[in-house]
Image (cartoon, rainbow, N blue to C red; front, side, top):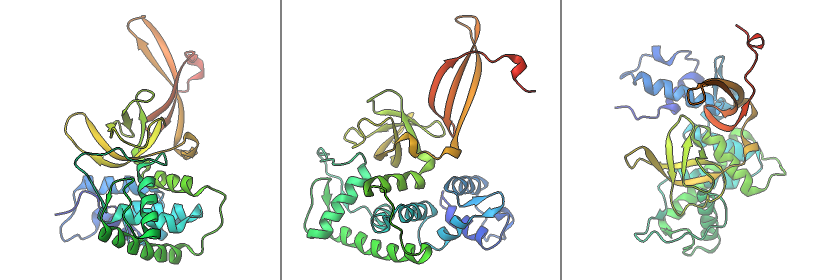
Length: 294
């Protein structure tokens, strides 16, 4: 039985020169929906285009992790923090070394990212080799396993991408931007300032964990999502993002014309979207029909 996410196998087949993975002689063909979702994600990650596998995609194939995590590693390398990105990738790839306490104590946040808080806790553990309780109960054996995985991933990304350059981007910002690069399909915008409810790319309703580090930012990436039933999923780990981090080629501006039955008139709104997620919206003049092309 195939897993829900087959982005890794699809990218490998495409890198081997298979133009249409649907025609590949699978022993047990995956569902069409799984292939479509994989190709959509790989396109968002910049790994494939209609022309085939990109140079970035070829690098991702060389990394022993899911393409999403590989994208994080490559971005962290490009922004000058390959070692910290490798630790972040290991934390997301391996078994969680942080034990969820029953009382769900308030986290001692030092950043605007639940994930980055955890990275910093692991870094302190690595330096002191003793329990760090600021973010949660840390299992020593699990933490050591993640640190070993970090070393392996660092070797892998340096082998795939070469020596890291010095880039004038603060290390914490570089990690948070790397998370955005890895989870471009999980960008969410709050429904109201300071509220916990938000809407994600694709229209999915989500709700931030009440003790999340992301308290004020309007935009954030949903890293760890838990389906809890109902109309909204719970975001257990999120990471804030700044609007100017969003790739310009994914932003679109349009003027949408609708009929307002209450006022019995045609109205127009100028909207800026990241994929299908509305970033900005403002009323504007209804365009002249002569300015609208057929």
